[in-house]
Structures are given as C-alpha cells and as structure tokens.
Amino acid sequence: MKELLSRKAFLTRSLVGAFSLVGLTWGGKKVVSAFSEAKKINGKIQGANHAIGHLLRGLSNHDKEVEKKSDTLIQTKVLIVGAGIAGLSAARTLYKSGEKDLLILDLEDHSGGNASSGQNTVSAYPWAAHYLPIANNDNQLLLDFLEEHQLITGYNSDGLPIYNDYYLCHSPQERLFLKGRWQEGLIPNYGITAGDKKQIANFLALMEQYRQQKGEDGRWLFTIPLANASTDEKINELDAISMADFLEIHHFDSEYLRWYVDYCCRDDYGLTLEHTSAYAGIHYFAARKGKAANAEPNAVLTWAEGNAFLAKVLMTEFEDKIKTQHLVTQLEIAEHNVRVLAYNWKEKKTVEIHAERVILAIPQFVANRLLTPRYQLEEVSQFQYAPWMVANITVNRPPIENDGFLCWDNVAYTSKSLGYINTGHQSVERYKDKWVLTYYLPLSELSPVEERKRAIQKSHEQWVEEIIADLSGFHPAIRESIEEVDVKVWGHGMISPRVGFLTSDARKEANRVLEDKVFFAHTDLSGISIFEEAFHQGNKAARELLNTLV
Image (cartoon, rainbow, N blue to C red; front, side, top):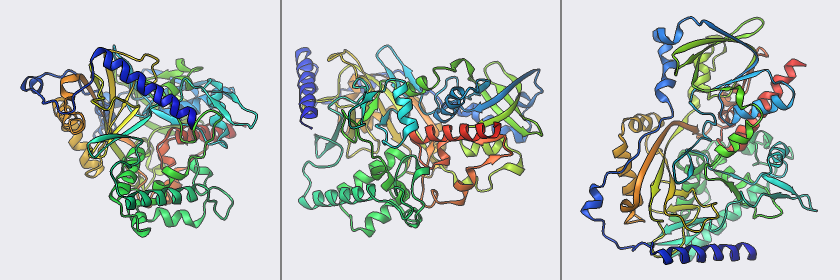
C-alpha cells in the first residue's frame, strides 16, 4: 500500500504542476456566459444499429428485401452468429482446437459487441465496457488467455500472477464529488456521520463474509464464472428478494450506504437496487477473489479504447473469418446441417449458409426470432435487458477545478449518471491540450421498454443538454470547454439480473443444445453481463460443439 500511495501522490503532484504551469485550472465559481450557452457543440448520435436489427420484426410482414432468394451459397463447418466477446471466445477455442473451417457473422459494421470503441484526433475511447478486474486465481482459462497476450507477464514464487504494469489502472483511480468537494475513492467518507461510517464498515464486513462463504456442496457461494458457484439453497433465498430488501432486513438505512450500493447495481447491471436481485447485488462485492503479485486485490486492467482491446486480441488468429454488416434472418435445423439466411444490409443482398454446427452468440430474444416454433424458448420474456446511453465528450480543459486531481473514474453523489472516465488516464504524457471523457448513463428510471422508446426519440441536442445539465452540477464551467459530444444508445445494453431471474426456469432452459447442431453463448445465459461471463459462455459453447464432433 505504501508504494501505491507514493505513486498516487507523485502523479497527483505531476498533474497539478503541469496544469498550473500552463494556467489551465478552473475556477469552481465561474459563471457560464450567455455566449457559452449559445455555443454550438458538434457531434452526432452513433447507433447500435437498431434500425437494421428491427428488420427481424419485419419477417412477420414478409419483408421482400430481406427474404428474397439468395444467389450465393456458402458452406462452412461452423457458423458463429455474433462477434461479441462470447462469439469471439468461442471462435478462439475452436481455432486453437484445430477447427479452422469457421465463419463469424455480425449485424454491426464492426466486431466486439459491447466491447466496441471509437477514436478521434485526441484519443481512442470505449463505447461500453472499459475495464477488466484481475482474474480469480482458479479461473485458469482466463489466466491462460491473459498470459498468452502478455497481460500477465509471469508468476512469482508463490504462484501469484504478475500483471503487465502498463495495463494496470494507474493512480489516482477514483474520486467522488460529495458535499461540494472531491474525495478520493467512491465510498462516501467526507462529511458523513460516525453512524453512517459504521454502517458502511459493517456492510463491507458482511460482504467479506459472503466472499469467504461456501455452500454445503463445498463450492464458493459467490464466484466467477457463475456456473462454478454453489447450488446451495441460500442462492434461491437471496435471488428471491431485491438488494433493497436485503439492506432493509439487515437494518442498513444509511443514505450514503444505500447510494453506494445503488451506484454499484447501476454500474454492473443497469438496475436500481430496488430491482436488482440480492444475490446479484452481493455478487458485485463477493465474487471477485483475484490476488496478484504486483497489484491490490481490487485492481483493474484498462485501456483507452476499453475492452475493445480484449476483443482485438481475442480475434488475433481469425480476424479474416469475420463478416460484419450481416443480419441473420432465418435458421433451419435440417437432417444433416443447419441452413441459415443472412442479409448483407450494406450491399442489400441475402446469402445462404449451410453449416454443420452453429453457435448463436446473441441475446435470447434475438435467437428466439430465428428459431422455428419447435425450438423457441417459451419464457423468453423473462430475459430483460438494460438500456444505456454512453457519450464521448471532447474537452479542451481538464475538469479538475481547484482540487487539482483528475482520476480515471470520476463520480458525483448528486448525479443520476455513473460519471465519466478519463480515456487518456493510462497515457504517459503528463500534459495534453485536449481530453476525452466517456460518460455513462444507465437508463433505469422507467421500464426498459419505456426507456428505449424515450431514448430513441431524443435528438443529439437534447442528449447534449442533459449531459451538460448533469455535469454542471459538479463542473460549473464544463460547457465552455466542450468541443464535441458523440452519443451512443444501447437499447439492450446488458442482461438484467432482476429479482428471481438467476434461479428461474427460463435461464436454466436457455442453457441448452439443439439436436447437437445449435449451441448458445451469451452473457444472458449467465444472468450477469461481464467480460468473464462472456468469455466463459463462449468457451463452454465451443467445448460442447467439439464434443459432438468426436
């Protein structure tokens, strides 16, 4: 800890010194001028391509453009639908096992799914997932992947992994705007009562107890991947109540504790604590058990482009096997193969694909539309997905005001958003003339359907004004520094572990294989949308497929 603190102090002093030399500190009480309010802010809304995705709904109306007969026939041994982390992980496992006759299709014009990124003249930046916590030490498949690509550079004499220091998140890592000032760390501490601090300490101690707890079957009650966790009855009990109920049962009523737990639920699940399964809520705190030789247990790996870095290294050996801009519209399981129609929306052509095996690395609500009624999941409506808005904001002054330190993760207690990350945080440069801030807003106030409708209807200008109104609460002069805001709405950003979902029959039934020909791989099968679960689901589907070829 001593080394970490000295490094943090050094970087903080470096930032203050650099910005003081060039006179870029902000005045916390600066008044926004009428000119700045009228300033035109450039940028645009960059879809996930919901308009193309909604073509699937048109099948019931016999959309002639999509359903027209194909003049092109492609034959492949394995077809993977979806080039997100799960699909790419499945392809990697198949490729390393010698099964190289494969094809990967994706709806978007890029691969990576939620691990996608963009770039401007200032920096690369993430459009969704942006970090990976250090791995649990018993998650050997993930450790091997990280070592293969030099994210782990070796192991010490105690067998603990040594993570690449270039990718470990630099200090200072986190700050919280609370009671008119910034404090280090995201757990409320500044200006709160001794009673609040005691409740927070007691809650964290309880989470540590859960972290160390095993079920009657000898397995961790909470771990990653979720498939390795205990099936003890305690899981059912915790999944049957909300995280809000859990706090009430344990008499945790501190405003600051409840805010922090709610923030954590919105951060990982896009849900408020009233709607999050208590099991999922505790999982956030208790499932990670990774230890490293050169990092704290809660350390994370991060990159300017976020988890798009991981997507890129996953596809290293088979990038030429990926075809983007292809919407799969039909899937038929035949006696000797699987027949698939895919619409190339860029060229407006339909192609037919015959594959021996297919992995559907896509959400269940999409997969269900492709399957014939015989194979459809009856309770697919139980799979609910949280919508998000993400914005990448280019500024020409750092938002450090008078306190003198900008962190990787910057959150405000008063904000409905999750704050923003500084995409340039890992850069070795101590001074730049522009910065990109990635702003995250889970759309969780209304139902997912209502939030999606409302989000799609908003203009770029409306989003920009909402973002500025939020940021102005803790950065009063932010409008004057903004040069560009690009916005992306994720209508179905991640699976929502709502009360009862993790132990539901629907989730159990979705983990299935159809006729030894069609396999499923997606985080919604886990119920928790994190990189490790996508990686696990992809590997699991690939192994299931390989077993049918023996």
